[in-house]
Image (cartoon, rainbow, N blue to C red; front, side, top):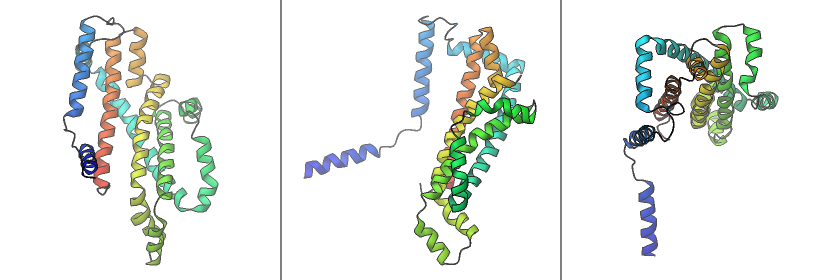
Length: 263
């Protein structure tokens, strides 16, 4: 028994071991060094895989010329507005669907029937409705963000302990207070899961929309330099998208720690 307890204790200690904060940076640094070595040894032709140093040089040139700033601002505006609108509407709709049985019965089948449709396929129709400009690109991002958020919020509301809701009603809470003090806090973990999932979706839709119907933006820049086969500048756009995805994830994790300290 003592040996078995020791084994269990060792396993628990291993699971609870704190990972150093620099582990992620170390992993990325090792990847970049390996990438640079592969390119320096010309294992892969520079046209197909430029070295990180060459990409950084190209990025500096694009920053100095102002080209990168213009494209980055355009993309950040589209994804910021689209994500905010889609997330806000998704959380609101998910709370309503989860709290109201009538709304659940009527609207949930509609949500689940529209969700599998590739949102970028709707871009030509949205352009027809809204015209050429920023609104179609913002709308397609908002649409792509809306569905993962509403589905996760709906699931979070359904997983709230019904005894907590009954207790709140018993003590005289109205519907608004039940949603604000019981349902919303209880469903926050699932809401943040939907927000994280939709962050990646928003980047995919941003790039797709800018490649199809934009003159400025990171997606348009990647397509332009891809057509010209200038892979160093193409990779600048790819790395910026990667950094945006990482930044969104870190910001959402920080908000999750602040809003859900018990998790």
